Length: 67
Image 1 (cartoon, rainbow, N blue to C red):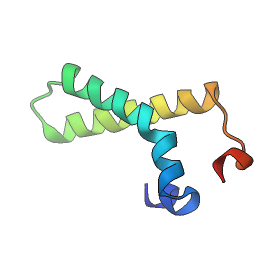
Image 2: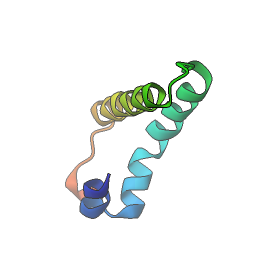
Image 3: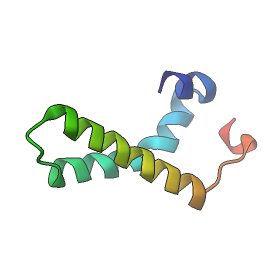
Image 4: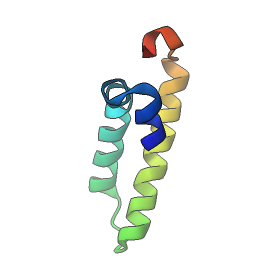
């Protein structure tokens, strides 16, 4: 996350990751009841990664859009 913010800037990184983060957070809150914080956190991060990856495939960003 530090590298993403360092490379893109806080505002661009927040815009790029806000939707996948919020969807992953909602999924984790409503569906993940593992009785283990570590497992729930890991599952949340995996879902966030997958959603972010899918977003990057559907809406590819060029360098001009990131600046």
